[in-house]
Image 1 (cartoon, one colour):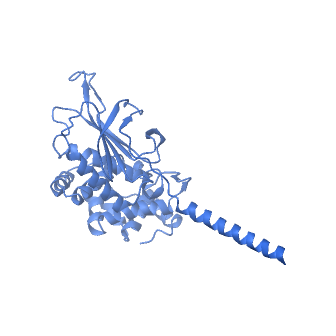
Image 2 (tube, rainbow, N blue to C red; image 1 turned 90 degrees about the horizontal axis):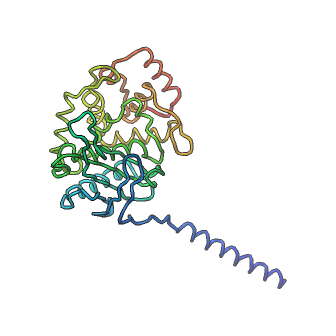
Image 3 (cartoon, rainbow, N blue to C red; image 1 turned 60 degrees about the vertical axis):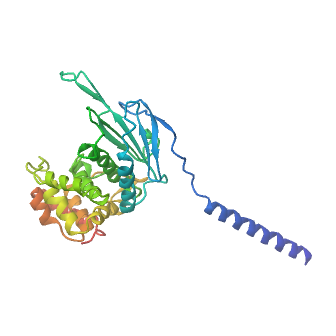
Length: 314
């Protein structure tokens, strides 16, 4: 009898210890490192050591040695942008911050056939990318006598554009952008920039984007396509603005084929229209006809998409 009591006490103690360990394990949060004071670039065409010039809860900013440190407007602009993106599209990994690198770019052999701009333009990386140390990061450069001085035009448009690529390629916990094969580098970014600018207090710049897009055409999928005017803006304005943009990526993440957290293939046109219809909660076939034209091949693709993805409803 005494032995039974002793065994019971030991068993009860073991259970309590086990529970204590489980609760401790569950309460331990993954540690995210604070932004470093410098970053050594180690990606194509970028090998500079850049230094931190600003940090808050949303962004960590780094300038190269040629940047004018008195240029501070990007801090709040990109902090507000990233806060809005996280509010709209959800989290992007464990680190809450966006890392932003700005360069004052250098033009070599200017005015000749060998002209080359070092670190011009921009590129993104996400928390999925080992190449950029698993950070959500945008790396942007402008050339000229007044680069980055005024928060208008490409100075504000380029970095927001690059954030849009992170949204396309890393939202809702999935890596990849299966829509890029259809909309290319910049078509989604036109409506993305427009929406972000409207929601960070830059309606003036958003209005410029809107006006510019009324006459901007592309040759894909057919010559004279108005991606913004005839596709994205009608969907955006009729079906929930930023909400419908987010629903598209959320539906892809939930329903489109993936393996080990990464999309396994690209969308075709029928699937593209099907998923956007699901996001809008409305059949967008007629809108697609207006914007892109139509074909028997697309009709077959759309029919197959409805069969392959029956959970996408509208």
